[in-house]
Length: 570
Image (cartoon, rainbow, N blue to C red; front, side, top):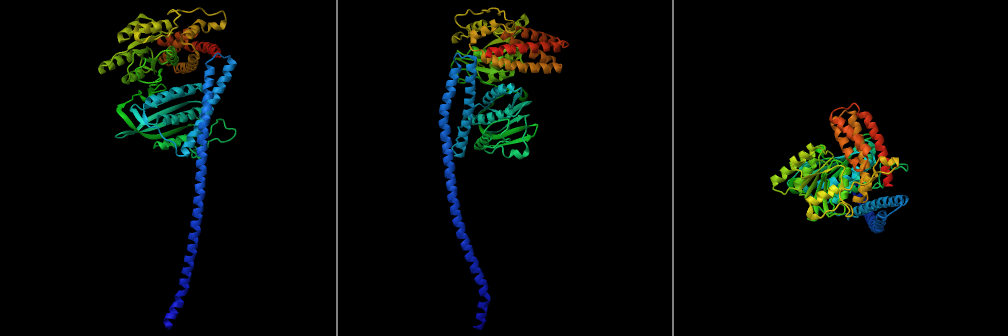
C-alpha cells in the first residue's frame, strides 16, 4: 500500500501537466473554429460583393454599348452626307472618340465576364490563314502611318481550317499588335505563327508578336498581365490605356487551354507570345508561301458580298503588288454583286487558286516573288491537273509594246488592260468576258473610253491632272479611300527606292520605280510618273549614275502631289 501511494505521488505531476495541455489545446481548437467561421463569413461577403460588382459592371457596360453604337452609327451616316471640311473634321473627331470609348467599354465588359466566370468560348470552324491576312491588312496601314515595317511570317504547314474561337484569337492578336505598334517609334513589328506540334487530331500553335520598341525592365514584367496594371503608371505617361488589355489576353489564352508570356530587353524591344492547341478540320495545309514571302497580304480576302465561297455574284481575284491598284479595282466594283479576293504577288495568287474557283482574274504582269506570266502558267497547269474550269485572265500592264502583248497571249491571258486603268476599257472587258453577270463600273450616261478634259490654268493643277481625278470620281464616286492608300504607299515606295539607290540595287530600283509610275499615273500625276519611267529605264540598262539626282526631283514632285491630294481629301 505504501508502495502504490508513492507511485501515484510520482505520476501525478505529469498527468496534471498533460490534462492542462489538453485543456489548452481544446481551447485553441475552439478559438480556431470560431475564427474560421468568421473568416468564411467574411469570404462569403467578399465573394458576394465581388459578384455584385462584376454583375453591375457587366450590366452597365452592356447598357452603355447600346447608345454608343447609336452615336457611332449616326456619326457614320452624317459623314456620308455633304459636309463642309470643318464640319467633317469635327464629325470625324466624334467618331474617333466614340470608337475609343466603345473599345474601353468592351474591355470592361470582357473583364467583368471573366471575373464572374461567365466568359464562354464560341468554338466554330474557321480559316486561320484568312484571319491572319485580315488582321495584317489592318495593321499594315497603321504601321505605315508611323513609318514602321509591319510584316508576317506564317508557317506553311498550318491546317486549312481549325475548330476554335476565331473572335477571341483575333482579340488577343489585335491587342498584342496594337500595343507593339503603339510602343514602337522606329523599326518594325512582326507576327510569327508556327506549328509547334502536330497531334493525331489537333495542332499546337505558337503566336509571337515582336517589336523594336521601348522594351520592358525586368522588375515590371511580372505586373504586365495583372488587371489595371501598366509599365508606366505615372500621370505623365506618353501612352494611355486602362491596363486591362493584357490581363484579358492572359485570361482568354488560359480559357483556350494555353499559356502566354513575354521576353523583353529594355531599349531593344519585346516579344509577346502565346501557345494554344486547336483541333484540325481536314488534313490539307493552307499554304501561305515561304515564310519570308508571307508578309502583310497573307491570302487576305476582302469579300464584297459579306460571304466567302457562296454562289452569289461573280468571283473575281485581283492580283497586284501595289495597294493603290488593288483598292482602285475594289472600289470600281462597289455597286456590283461580286466576291473579291486580293493577292499581293503571283505566288499568293497560285495558292489562293488551289482552294477557290474564280470567274475572272486581273493579273498584274510585273510583281516581286512571282510575276504575272509565271503565275498564269502555274494556275493553268494547276487547274488542268485538277480538271477544274479555267477562269478568264486579264493582264494588267503599263507596257504597251507588241512583245508584251504577245507574251500575254502565249502564257494564256485572254485580254489585257493598260495602266493607268481606263474605266471604259474595264467596262469593255467585263461586257466581253462576263456577260451574264451584267457588271457595270462606268455610269450609264458616259460613253466608254472617254478621255476627259485638260487641267485648268492654276499652276498647281499641272502637278495632278484634274481630268484624271474627275474621271475617277465619275467611276468610283468617293475617291478619298483610294487617295489615302496611294499617299501611304507612295511614301513607302519612295523609302524603298531611296534604300535601293543607296545599295545600288538595280533590280529593286527598276521594280519600285515601275510600281510608283503606274499608281501615280492613275491619279494624273504625269510629271511624277514620267520621272519614275526614266528611273525604271536607267535601272533596266544598269545605268545608275544619274538615278540619285533624278530621285531628288522625284521627291520634290511627290511632295507637291501629296500636298495637292491632301487638299482633295479636305
